[in-house]
Image 1: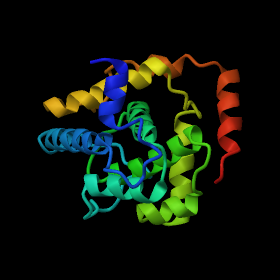
Image 2: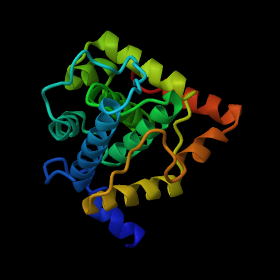
Image 3: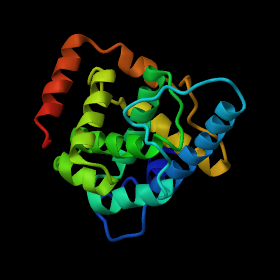
Image 4: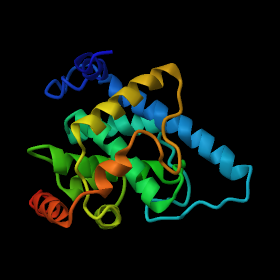
Length: 215
């Protein structure tokens, strides 16, 4: 499938049309996350492995489904549709760095944090942390803590190459075929090399750019 056709299928060209039908990327992202949570939780339940507990873990899974949660963020954040692909990339990077599993206990907090960070980094305008906290159902203080935990664990390495973005779009498109796309640790199509080889100068520039966003 051609690159432009993949982007069109995912609804990435329709960011301005907020009153139109929800883009397909939301459904595919939710499906990918749900499949991999099921796989990870079966693995954890059937072994003696223990997950890494982070600031993103809740005491119990939220009652709102992943798909409805993503649709809620889409409806109220008004971020560009591409933010959902970039948030997916960020999630894999964080899980790899922490050597953690994606589960029903951490997926909602990871989503709201990653989408907010993606919007701050990509979009010309975005809402502040207090607003995103209301969307996500967490306190502003918790939103701030999660953002800082995420950013410092990634050393503010938020750049995504054109090739990396395209690869993840293809991965999401394949979700329609039933593949499980997020595993732990992450060894799939190369975000690791894409961000680990950044220089300190580039990282400092990223920090400066991100810090100018509304927080």
